[in-house]
Image (tube, rainbow, N blue to C red; front, side):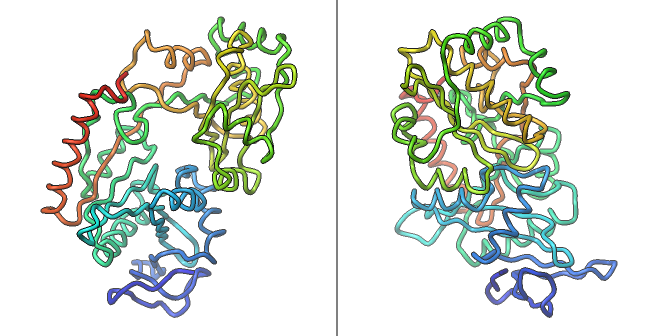
Length: 370
């Protein structure tokens, strides 16, 4: 299941359940075997099982997310490090050409890698990433793991460069630098007790206004599509609902779908990836009811937290989205931000100049401002 790399590949006599070929191979001081390589299709289940079981796992590192992005022109790569036959670290990389005129590639690992930042598996993962990059013409790997800010220094110690947040961009980066993440410790009653009083009142009101909450099916996608067009692809349905890990929750009123939210459980947590509501029915508070239903499902799954998604990279009491999520209790969570692992310095400098020019253009156009 690990595909053998180019001339730098090594073989380790069939060690491990993922096959014999590897991009890199090491022998630990205790005699244990380490290997790293690309995971092929037959290794999909083992790869996903590792991501789901890891406390560092994230939905955007699952195999299926790479397949969703393939439709947008990205090439997904899944790299894993094995230790004595079991996966110890992994990273899902999205690859795209920087231009049609060259073979240079841009790599992005959304919310990756899946590894303990200070462990030996992470160090070997970065080595294998560098080896693979040389064979594929990658200029840079950009990653933004959901690690706390203090762990960003471990990325720097591994040779990655921190990127400053874009001041004029609401999220500050490609993925949110800050999210609202609700702790589920203590069960549902404890979660509810941590809501701000007005949100507790809104939940009770929403459940008394005639809304009916139910789990959606594939047949409900057209209705949800009208509310959130970007979420209505069949590939996305298969990606996020396979294995029972996803739930499309719908709010109905008098037979009409008036709101929807998509939640996905992975590893220790649950993520609310999309939410939308019909403004004509906002008096019914469908979004409040849907977020409450998502919390119920996350507690049933015994998740440690429920992530309500991004907020502005600067706190702003006048921001309606920030105020809405704040009502569900403490949850302001910051991450270490974007970091670049550079493989080709000269090409990288040209890439960064072009990127910053594009960000400046977005700023002048007013896109993404908080």
